[in-house]
Amino acid sequence: MNEHDSGRIAGVLQADGLVATEDAAQAEVIVLNTCAIRENADNRLYGNLGHLRPLKEANPALRIVVAGCLAQKDQGAIQRRAPWVDVVVGTHALPRLLDLLRQAEREGPQMDVREYTEVFPSALPARREVAHHAWVQVAVGCDNACTFCIVPLVRGPQRSRAMGDVLAEVQGLAREGVLEVTLLGQNVNTYGRDLTVPGSSRKPLFADLLRAIDGVEGIRRIRFVSPHPHDFTDDVVQAMATCERVCEHIHFPLQSGSDRILRAMRRSYRAERYLAWLDRIREAVPGMAVTTDIIVGFPGETDDDFERTLDVVRRARFDAAFTFQYSPRPGTTAGTMEGHVPPPVVGGRFDRLVDVQEEISLERNRDLVGATVEILVEGTGRKGGAQGRTRTNKVVNVPGGLDPGTFADVEVTGAHPHHLTGHLAPVPVGA
Ligand code: SAM
Ligand code: SF4
Image 1 (tube, protein in one colour):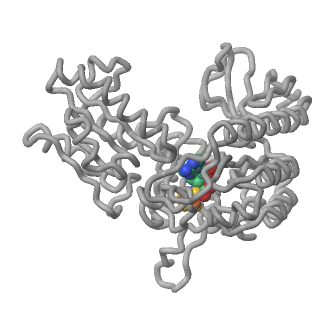
Image 2 (cartoon, helix red, strand yellow; image 1 turned 60 degrees about the vertical axis):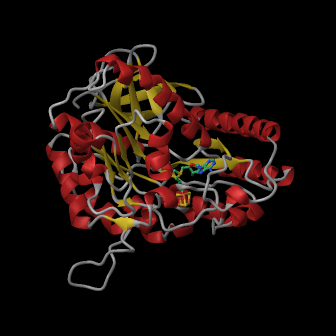
Image 3 (cartoon, helix red, strand yellow; image 1 turned 30 degrees about the horizontal axis):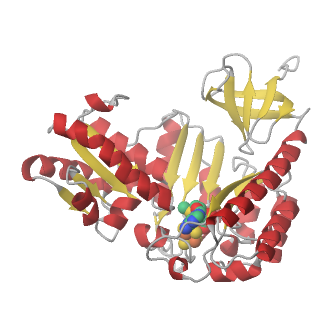
């Protein structure tokens, strides 16, 4: 979501005539787009602002902007701690960025941390990092209340974009040459609960949206993040199974394998139900890759709870996992819970989890050696050669130069926990 918002911030500034620079000393405007999900992001903001202070002192015309979730969370505290910040723009106020910059020039420091999204940032111009891929926001905010999570506090309740608006955006992107879209929402499968279909009392569903986008000429791959296991319904599985362009990858956040901890997290599924869902999804969509998010060291997590997480990880056989050490966030229910786990214990559990998952990731990737996979080239790999992604979201490195945005069939020859290697598959005679 932050990458999406950063693309919009860059797009707005470029449309106003600015050009990007890698050199902070040359910049007229510097925007720090911030994340509040864990505490180290907080600490980094004030460290980064400290580094920018001498630049501002040397060049008073420089405008420093803090945007995103920390702007929404810390509000006036940012300019109190760092009075050289010119603009604080919260998550709902992004469309006001240029106005705020102009006002700051005339009147001094500005802040807009309104509580409600009136205009979706999707309406703003965007700068895309790669020409063939685009993030498409389908909803902002979240109606859940997972006890560890600050998102509902800084992004507000869920608001879905009208299906026609999302579809029009994707059609426009396809006309610009975009081949792959990633649909974004904190809980994509509750998309539409706050909308009605014009002329009926029916609510549009996420599966309807997938089907509609599957019909957009020119879009070759559709991805989405993240579905919440609690709201995952059969119609989404069916849409994934039948929509040709919807990729065989699902990010399905587990968070914990212990039912006791899931209950304390206010995640309303349980471990066995989660695993049963995975079986159903894998049965309906053969070759489906599954990734997840897991938090280690939630308050009150015992060794036994953690062993249950490891057990689910072994049974689920995820292709990859984003693993997080629990970080207390202000304003969340878990932040004031008893039983915070000592950091060395959290660290030890975290390392064990990463080891177990890396082994599984490697095994899953080894299963692909010898197979031919389609990649969409994204750029150059770290060791030269081309780097692309499979439909299952696996990174593949191949020797030789291929332009970003081209599709290639690759024979997989090597497997690592986080990527595959291969070479271009021979083109069949007559193809
Ligand atoms: N909406 C998504 C869902 O329901 O799974 C999650 C979005 S959140 C931005 C991304 C991930 O950050 C979460 O899945 C969780 O694993 C992690 N996370 C959120 N709050 C955290 C916290 N306080 N400490 C550690 N990790 C956290
Ligand atoms: Fe946070 Fe996701 Fe839970 Fe919403 S569903 S509160 S974004 S973890």
